[in-house]
Image (cartoon, rainbow, N blue to C red):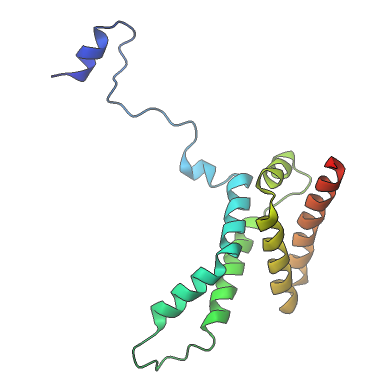
Length: 147
């Protein structure tokens, strides 16, 4: 039985109904958008503790010969630097970035920014801190202007 023949009985175009619908945006293209990048930044920072636990469990041996003392620090370092790779492209003057920040703005994003600023401040990576503070200030100013 041909499904296209059945649907063609009802008229309409000769569209094949077994074809997948065209997508409006491909995943590769979506991953380049500011909305995706802000969301990934927030997700990575807020879930860093889960990542740290998985990292420890991955390297832990039954004899515990491998020292686990620094693994939490390694997990935190990886999470923050990976998150940074998403938020470093943020352009505060760009309308698309502004809109993306406002769409994603919630307590979790505020917390993620505070955690990142603290993390990079401890490591004296002040350029990163300055960038994150600009984002934080933009969000705060936008929230105050709405009130």
